[in-house]
Length: 241
Image 1 (cartoon, helix red, strand yellow):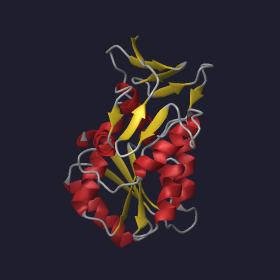
Image 2 (cartoon, one colour; image 1 turned 45 degrees about the horizontal axis):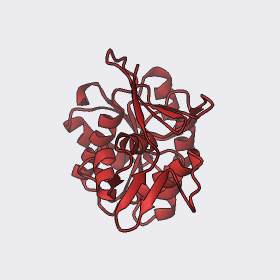
Image 3 (cartoon, helix red, strand yellow; image 1 turned 90 degrees about the vertical axis):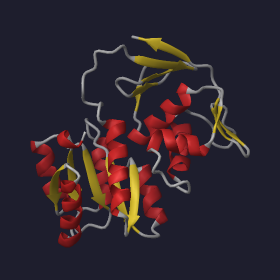
């Protein structure tokens, strides 16, 4: 995974940028350093980037704007955003704009590597053709295509999901009509290094309900089980194509 993964570091502090780059180099990743949005855009015009490590506080175009542009692009690029410690509002907004994960400063180098690897594991096959049969989960008129990572509504229209939202919905649809704990969902979608107090799942569940037309006040598709976790209520049929 490391040998073929290109990570773009977008950070305007040269000391931090170099420190993170050296850390990723030592782990075997290919790294490109970008001071800001312009350098990132030039890199994206030349190369396919597997992950953008994005600082929110940048001179010129800020990280939230860059994150939104990347998620609106034709080919989605996973984003691990870096925020100042305690900036919960910025983290939530970043996840709303489509970031796959966040990491507060100052961060533990081992945690950075763990989160990078977790994102790449979830997204490394997105651009690769597969000879295996595609798994498609059909529920309430919707279709979730695990191979192409596409969600289609009952009218056949594609619904945009971030990488994290897709992984969460896939975990739910793979285990329908079962109570899944928050820790299980964190483990399946973010890896065993996920912080048990991580609130990303809550943000992504809220976004998924909206996109599925599930009333957040009285959800019927993704139900909250008091003291237990979450239950994906509709029957699910797994198709092979």
